[in-house]
Image 1 (tube, rainbow, N blue to C red):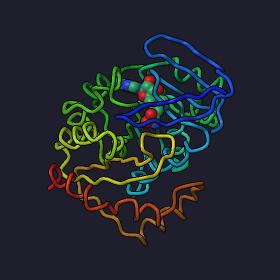
Image 2: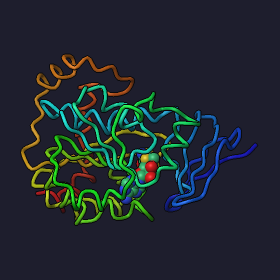
Image 3: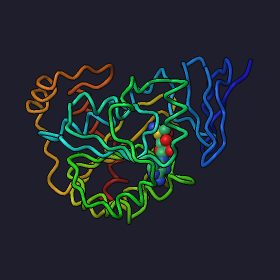
Image 4: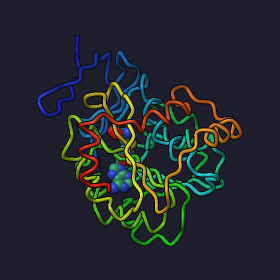
Amino acid sequence: MEWFVEKHNGTGFMVKIDKKIFEEEGLQKIEIFSTSLGKMLVIDGKIQFTEADEKFYHEMLVHVPMIMHPNPEKVLIIGGGDGGAAREAIKHKPREIKMVEIDEKVVEACKKYIGIDENALDRIEIIYEDGIEFVKKCEEKFDVIIVDGSDPDAVSKPLISREFYHNCSNIGEIFVTQSQSPFLQKDYFEKILKNSSSFPYRKIYLSHIPSYPSGMWSFLLASNSKLEMDKKELLKRYKNRKIKTMHYNVDLHMASFCLPNWLIEIVKKYVK
Ligand code: SAM
């Protein structure tokens, strides 16, 4: 029996491998496995998603910021080559979705061997470019910016830089990025909070993603204007937009912003 093991700070997550479906090494090492949790995408040795729990992640990453916007017409996704974020964003029927992905091979492999995008990747505009460079020169404005990058190593590293967040705050109204595990990846988490101070309003929310380090996953929601969360209004938008979700609902949305004391203390160091 073969196991894939991803290690983080003295811990590990194990998943049983049936077989390797795909492997290619270019800008990044891309591997796709068939596992006990369905198909699994691995980039540079790190699990990007498993079919069994990808909706936990993509629905929380996308619907929280999208529903907070009264009318999200223009959406920018940075990263997200597997198409899970695009699939969820489409449900809000925006006028335009642009996705800026650094590695065309991720998109090709995910479309051919997995298909979680449910053809979303054929229905949006994809720009193959480094997200850092794109936001540096971008003159367009977006209602929602969604950053769906991998662990901040190698090509993803600048996606948690001060310069990147600053440029996003100039072009986006509501911004979201996955912000790693505050339990096992505290250094990354604090760096994200430290570097994103150009947004005057910021909140952290949590979701349980079993195949990510420790399962305790965080997201940074940020904006130049106050992040209002009126449950009645959010419910109205969810209903009016006729969004069908497997994991996300408005109760979960509200609850995901309730943080444990130890995490409130960390966030307070950076968000006043
Ligand atoms: N949810 C996943 C996770 O947390 O592990 C991330 C999934 S998605 C596959 C990550 C994507 O970000 C990859 O396709 C990668 O090529 C892309 N990416 C990494 N750095 C990037 C950059 N600087 N600009 C644009 N895309 C980038």
